[in-house]
Amino acid sequence: MSYDIKDISLAKKGKERIVWAEHDMPVLSLIREQFADTKPFKGKKIGLCLHVTAETANLARTLKDGGAEVALCASNPLSTQDDVAASLVKDFGINVYAIKGENNDTYYKHIESVLKYKPNITLDDGADLISVIHKKYKNLIKNIKASMEETTTGVIRLRSMEASGELKLPIIAVNDADTKHLFDNRYGTGQSTLDGIIRATDMLIAGKNFVVFGYGWCGKGLAMRARGMGANVIVTEINHIKALEAVMEGFRVMKGIEAAKIGDFFCTVTGNINVIDKEHFEAMKDGAVVSNSGHFDVEINIKQLRKMAKSVKAAKDFVEEFVMKDGRRIYLLAEGRLVNLASAHGHPASVMDMSFSVQALSAEFAILSNNMPPKVYNVPKEIDEKIASLKLKSMGAEIDTLTEEQVKYLKSWQEGT
Ligand code: ADE
Image (cartoon, rainbow, N blue to C red; front, side):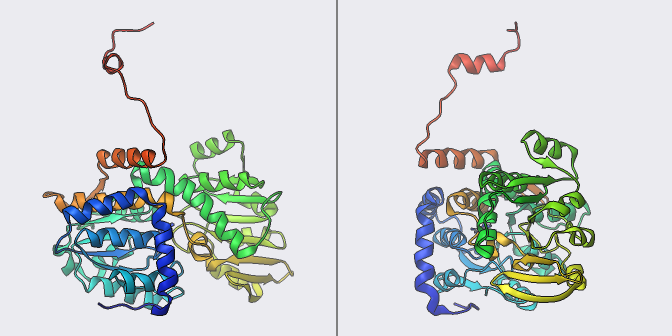
């Protein structure tokens, strides 16, 4: 075994957390039992570039029990749970290359460590693994059957590679499965982002103006949960339909620059660059708290904020205080990286149960497929249906089935008014 982690002696705590998460991952546990029987990945190597969390640990175990040799690196320099990384190495025989707070050089060195295994399947969260393979290690492409992509940002990058003719591998867009984005992006991001903001700041949300930049699935979840905690939620958007949806949900919708003047908390979930920029910082009130829950740390123009500040200091863990030339203070959380994973523990296990079940079954589908030319594929509908039905069952909810008469009615067109 080989690894590069913070401290192997943290394994005991990590194992407790992995087992705790497992309790809330019944669908993935079932898949793990099945994989232990059928060994779909026997003799195969799987390279993972995912947030190294207790939930990811359970996915890595599932793939290993399915017969794979597994190597894992972080998909973000600040999201690694060092105790989990230690337990994965010590207790579960997974090769891990991830240290919370690693710099960019180490981050990419760790990606290369995973690529040294010459994986047959890869699982990415943000497409960094696939991007490095296409830029530097094209020779590995012939070994790789397919890659799974976990997140919206990654799928967007991969679709743009496909559109420009540069994609040389089949990709399964795990993010786009209904049992992924409708739950993980919405309920997962909603809860874990507030968790991250609250753990970092210890501040009250009730009665505050909470500005959500972007009303995609993540933004919807965040706006919903911030309202649930008593905030006055303001949404900014660039898309008319999404903005309309936010208005009809009862949120105030306005331009970012107007929101900047009145917000107490700001959080970006757009997937785009410099969404909070110079003009917004200039307009913000003293004490504004700024964070990001989108995949990359590009949504807040931090370079600009640094330039505008007369002093910068760490206020507390995961909180940096920027004092502007006019004396106003702006607080940046988690260096503008994913606040839900940097200062909290990411999405709860119950929702990752579905996302990672999609990953596991999509990887099995890919390894068993014979003909997948390079392009971005949707997750097969049957996988989505199976996961939804198992999840419902695990939650004790039953649903009805159509009667024969109803099936016939839905197929006919003659009957009307
Ligand atoms: N992305 C968001 N939350 C996560 C978690 N708990 N584990 C892995 N990836 C995540």
